[in-house]
Amino acid sequence: MPELAEVEYYRRQWEPGLRQKIVRVALHREKRVFRSTPTRTMERRLPGSVLLRSEARGKQMLFQFSKGLWLGLHLGMTGKLRVEGPRFEPGRHDHLVLYQKARALVFSDPRLFGRVLFHETPSTPPWWAKLPPALDSKAFSPEVLSRFLKRHRNLPIKAALLMQDGFPGVGNWMADEILWRAQLHLKTASGSIESRALTVLWRTIRAVCRGAMKHISPNFDDPPRGWLFHERWQRHGRCPSHGLTLKRASVGGRTSVWCPLCQPNR
DNA sequence: CATCTTGTTACGTT
DNA sequence: AAACGTAACAAGAT
Image 1: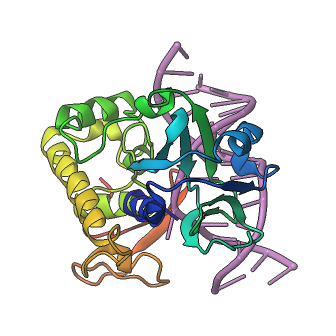
Image 2: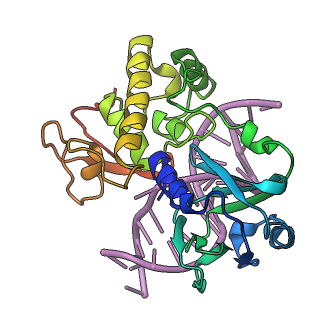
C-alpha cells in the first residue's frame, strides 16, 4: 500500500514513543521481514535505549535510538505502524513490538514484503546516506530528471517512475496520477520525451508529491476531488477531466490506468 | 475456486 | 557492464 505520504503518516504513528525508553522487544524472528536482520542483537541491545527521532525518505523510514542504535523500516505492500497499550499481546502479523512503559510500538505486515534493518553505529547507517534526494528538494532538478530518463531511454515512462533510485516514494497510483496530469502515455519511451514535455513532467512530479503530502500524511485523508486517485480502483473509472472511461492494462509489471483522450499513444 | 493486489529483488537475456 | 522483462515472494480480498 504505502507510497510517499502514507509512509510519512505511518512514521508519525510512533511519535508518542519519542524520548521514551524501550523496556522489552518482541519479534517473530523467522518471518521474512527479518531476512538478514540480526534479531538476537536487536533483542539484546534495544532494551534500555531511548527512541530519539525518526525520519522518512521516500518509502524508507529510519528510527534513531540512544546507544548508537538505528532501526530501518520498509512497509512493503501491507506494512503498518501503530501504537497499542503496554499490555498488548502481538497478533499473527505483528512481527515487531517495542514495548515502552506506557505503550507498545507495533510493526505489522501480513504480506511480509516489508523489511526491518538494524544497525549499531555512531552515525547514520551507510544505506540511509546513499538514498536519492527527495523529489521536493532542490537537488531534484529538471537536469537530474533528464539524466535519469536518458539512462533508461527505452524503458516505458511508467516503469521509470516506479524506480526508487530516481523517484523515491512514487508508487503505482502516484505514477499514474503524474502521467495523467502531464498528459503522457504510460508506454512513452523515457528517452523520447522532449524538453517542453519534460519540464511539464518535472513540475507535475513535484505537484503530485506535494499534494499527496498535504492531504494524506497529516491524517490519511484522500487527495482532493479531481485526482485520478478516486477513479482508478473502480471497475469503470472515468477521467476526471471529461468523463471518458479510463483504459486499464499492465505496464511495467503493474496494473495501470490512463485516459485515452488525455494521454494518446503517440 | 480463480484472480486480483498501492513493492522489491533475483535472475536470465540482450 | 548496464539495461530490461519477468517470475517470485505471501496472504488477504473479491
